[in-house]
Image (cartoon, rainbow, N blue to C red; front, side):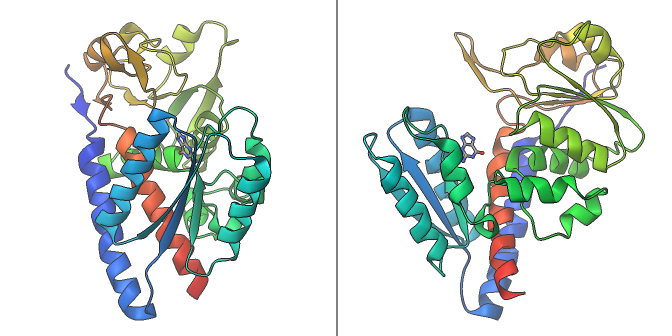
Length: 291
Ligand code: GUN
């Protein structure tokens, strides 16, 4: 069976179109447009691409993009000062400090300094803590908190593809704070039975074979083999790995497509969703201001 592709490009375009429409209505009603500040420190080429894409998405959605670029040599003090200034600005509703930061800068201190009500990345412990205390997904959606954009994007892909995880076995491979842990919690909030696997998991193939839904977020090219995928399973591949053969996901795509019912491609799957959900979070941040 050839799997149906979950088209992240098309779905992210639909999310951004919804945001653009709502931003237009919001601006008309309240007389201002949501603003997103993006801070880039140094010249990491991948980060420069991400920041460029974020700026483009802002313009597609009618969100003001406020860019701050600091040199590689910026000090912790300079970066902290900038974050405090952005926290204090009324025209900045969301703040995102692009990661990774250059060596020598303390990421944790910076993320903790961002006002949680502007933390559209959803990385601040206040936002993480808030969402962990709520049992069901619909209630999480209605709270004044921000979900991290990639896990939120995975959930939106499942939702818009019509995949219901209620009562199903979901296996998440990877336990990072940015993807693995939060996506596991979100799947649980939609009543999936969730297993989180990592480098010490025994018999990973056996565990994955029991999954109705697989979320791969380990960061190793084609680590998850096609024959680990149960017939009819849904596969969400969060991996973006640069190889000599080009960009590869964490899942052996061709072989997995033979067995899965639905699968995300790399590129063009989860990737575009992260920025779309960032746009959604920025609109939410502006809305929370007029509540
Ligand atoms: N670097 C790669 N992905 C992300 C992201 O989602 N947020 C931030 N701040 N930095 C990133």
